[in-house]
Length: 97
Image (cartoon, rainbow, N blue to C red; front, side, top):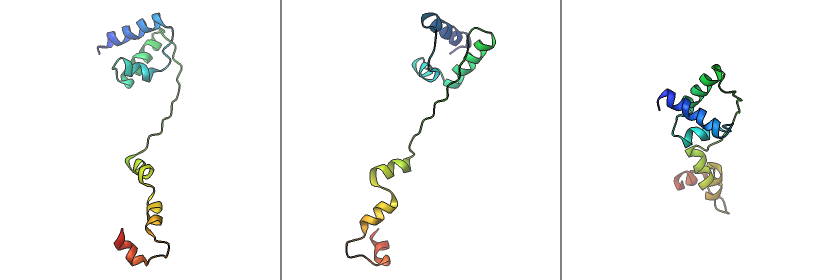
């Protein structure tokens, strides 16, 4: 988006509703990169059009390895379930995996 259009969009939103509660959601809704949106918000704040309150949001996302552990168990869990009740020699276990 062109710089003026983004700032106009922000100001229009603030006329309709006096607060943008979540800039991340706003950026997704309007297909604007969040970093770009924050730049425009800071610019408007410097010109005293808006007041910014920074909120920090932490999000945890599993890696591919983490998803594998959730689905199939950890390597230790898998190893434990490869061992039969009567036990097994380490050499045979290595071949079995």
